[in-house]
Image (cartoon, rainbow, N blue to C red; front, side, top):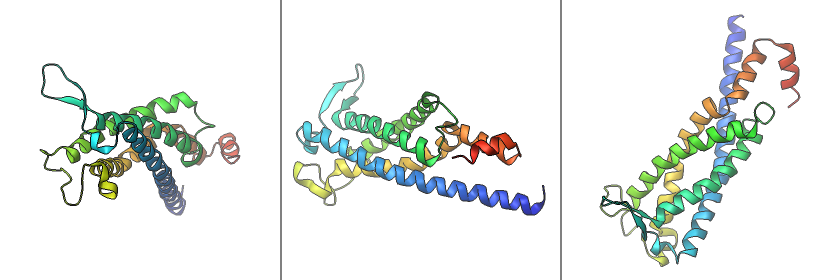
Length: 200
């Protein structure tokens, strides 16, 4: 392989990664909408964001508890995770021809769950008055009439934005690895693999 060919392959790979990241971002944007809609619906069903800090149950032997805001985070994540997975599988990474649905879904869910677990702590830090990261008044409010200044919704949105790049990197190198290995074989010059790939 010549230096020119190596440089061309490197530029192509970086270009493909950038395109995937942009697509991942668009999918993530639609996932944010899905996530926020689920969060709003769940909060509305519970009487509004003013009740987001309601305690659902305590953890025995500790001062910690599970609040409604945490349930909203988990519920909205599960719905948005499924939405994002299907779009990323069929459009961003186009891996449907190279791996089974479940073989990719479980890693995608695992990655999302790890990011969601980290995100839960971030969201709680922004909604807990004793936290140094608490979203302060007068810019944010916790009542039902807060509207666009709702602390609950802003904390939810900011947390999604923070965890999205982590999701992309791990999903690219782990969850959708079947496409990467397929393209590696193609660049190595396997005619059969090239013929199959160019049918996409």
